[in-house]
Image 1 (cartoon, rainbow, N blue to C red):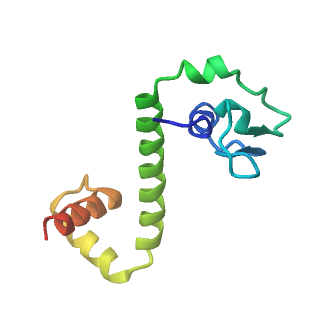
Image 2 (image 1 turned 180 degrees about the horizontal axis):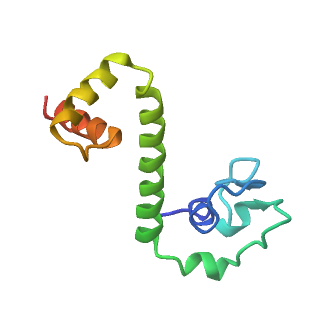
Image 3 (image 1 turned 90 degrees about the horizontal axis):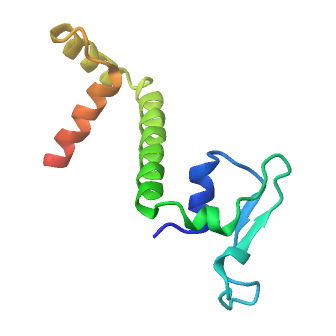
Length: 116
């Protein structure tokens, strides 16, 4: 189940000046979890509890997962480009498949590693 912070991230990717406290400062749970949102962003209006509650948890979780995977692969691809051995292997693989992208090549290596 997505929490309020995740729902805010879903609505406003990369938003800043928003914090979510899952408990009060003394560690006791909130009577209303919405009260844990500390909204200091002056550019975007704080969504109402009803707006956040109406979001589909599964949709929020899937979208955030997709975003995380996209970011992970972008970082992976950037780091891998400095590995001359991988670059050489990619060039060899690309000679057999001109449409092969570097990211697709790395995806195939990850799939192979999962099979081990």
